[in-house]
Length: 201
Image 1 (cartoon, rainbow, N blue to C red):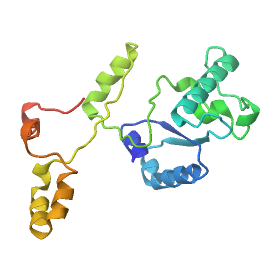
Image 2: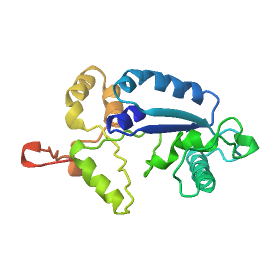
Image 3: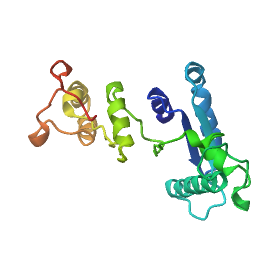
Image 4: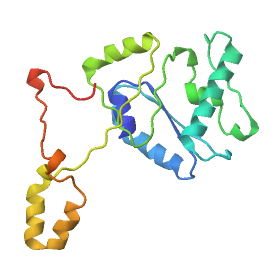
């Protein structure tokens, strides 16, 4: 779902980093699920193993290796105007070519990077893309908001009432997992797109 959301907004290349032995298989399965979309609009997909690293914190290790790929490309290419050489950065990374694995065969085409995690789905209104691009061109950094959906009693009242009628313990269990329709949580604010209400971007 994360990769599909990036495809949906036109991201042309996605690199998945992983450490566990089964993560490469999972990544390849996800890539296969997207094949129908890739036939419509191409997206480059790459999996890079983080094996051999003492630090197992994937975001940190991935960022370090990405920075190494950028530095290596700049060192080899000078101003960054050519193709990536097929080289190895260090013995422990000998299972893939660091610069083209991260940046593809033509690293000079990239201007921006979006750093994400596998449980985040990117939502951008199509009309906001131009404004976001302009902010990047001005040299600003953009950070996505992490929104946490929370169930509210307003949405589950019929389920709660049915549970309460059948089994009080089930109703109490459900009640403990959703926001009550009480106090600060009693008011529900509905967005009306016809008068210009929007969410997030």
